[in-house]
Amino acid sequence: MRESGVASLRGIAAALNARGVRTARGGRWAATQVGAVLRRAAHPAPWERPPR
Image 1 (cartoon, rainbow, N blue to C red):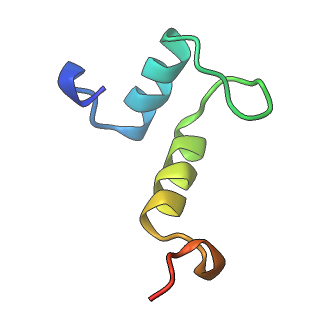
Image 2: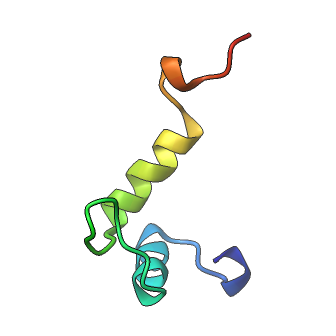
Image 3: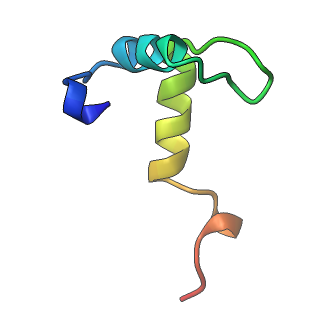
């Protein structure tokens, strides 16, 4: 998606929906969901972090 120039959460959600990518529950993507996924990816929970 970066190659296509999509930068906003709304744009990412629209691109995922256009590609037919469904959420874990089989629904369509919304900007809030994309933001939550990106936040979790950037800051994993303590039990998901690799050991030091």
